[in-house]
Length: 297
Length: 224
Image 1 (cartoon, rainbow over the protein chains, first blue to last red):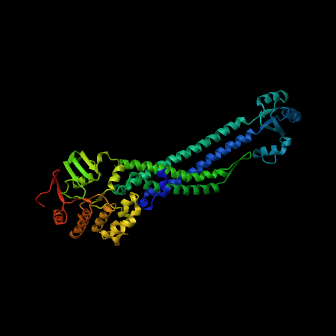
Image 2: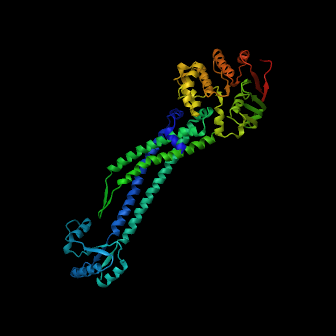
Image 3: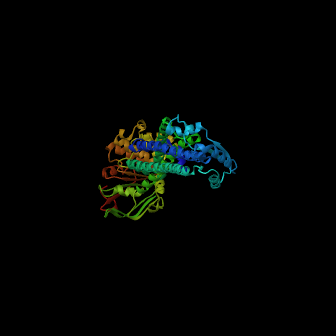
């Protein structure tokens, strides 16, 4: 904690003991900026995937569809029987017959907007909304089988599960990529710190000769790398956020929005990236510096 | 203060010196002489724990140097001012900042405000305070190194060929400063191969002259 606090209260001359220039310093800013830029997208992917999974789960779990066979002569009779079954089934809050206009909208992506659904053998759809307790799907299927032969109850489970799994995998992948970015940044900053320590061997020797402790010498390097990584990460995040803002947003067929990026309070996460980058740089540089100083004894 | 007890030092299978004993009492003044390559600088480095003896014991202010941690060594070095032959400065800092460096690393920078001007004046470098080490002459750098060595008010000042790169007049000025420090109670150890310089100082200070030759440390004799 003391070492971390010294980041903000280190004295100016102590910082100046290490020459301010060098490839390692510029490399640190660049690596932190590049990694933070990538981290913004990994984070956006992860959060978007989580949001989409949740949205799909909610949307699909909230309703079921009953499909009646496309036999025009029998549809009205079957419709009445089906509605009767549904209205007397415990756990079904409402059952609504989809209007021709709604059916047309569902088919529009494949057949265009002017399809005459009234004259075509299109199955009739009934939207079922369960109440809070839900209904017994197996029992309802059995009753429908007996009273409305050919009716198909679709609770969306067949394709809801794979979609949710895919979204979940995407979310895990996003977090894994973030962890990998953090590890790569730590490795790169460690290498840069080693290079800087090697380039400043004479500075370290002089500081030791005048009585500097390892923690003091390490501190001068740690402050420099931490602040540069924080600055680089801030640059990367700002650029990443700008790119996210100008990216076109996707709208998945069926009315499910998939806004790639941050929504509402999720923006807080983008602010965390420079802080996390600085923490990674602090830990990596301190480890590298103390190890190197020990080796140089 | 600093005691070397029957020490040996060698590297790569070669023994540089062996059976060397030396005791620097408070307020004493020592010259260490000997031919180039005899191990004078090595012996000095053992005195401020920059090297560890292969055999024997080095005691610094009563502590066995072999048992000191790196932090302990750092603290010990604040009590030993060292003037190097090659001065060892940070070239990107001003000469004033270089002189204040021991106070900076000891977190006593506020003391520099009082001491620095006085010290710069003592070594006649007031006008050069803002210049960087490469901008100074060899003599100015040596005087700055001496100022840095004493800014912590150390108990011991060790100087390795402090007059090696300066003319006769400047060497006399530097030695006069070291004698002045000795009169203030500081223990002084100077390594030099310049016998004439030692002779010139005999009337100013009561110094013990030691000679490192053939791997042995002996009391210097009639050549002085």
